[in-house]
Image (tube, rainbow, N blue to C red; front, top):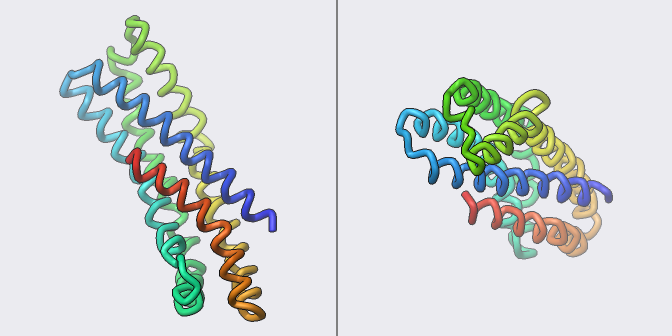
Length: 192
């Protein structure tokens, strides 16, 4: 089941981008107290934070099945619900990234973005990089989330098949991935 490794690898990408994003945000908001600029920056940050909220909202129900009785009783309905909605829901992070990019374009046109102050210049370079590589264009963070959702779907199908044969083994395999996912979600929640 290489789906587990792929889910965790892509979820780690999401988690790392959040850490980078938050550090950039801390530096900018603490060194640029200009209300007009911060209004645009905070609007962009709000859209980006919705991306990470989406990950939490999507994956939390799965990690809550943390006992065998809960798994046996609720897994099938949770999986059916996820399978029915994940394709429609998958477009939300891309929408949030598109909205964030619109605000970023405004930021790029501001005089603050052209600063020569070394700390802010470095931070704006980091912001430009993360926006270019992870939020805009190909939206790498969105692709990572989509991969998590697709691979999780495949993995859940395999767990459902195993559950038909042996629910105890299915639970133990299920918990193996869910414990790792829970650690990533905890990091995202703590930072958010």
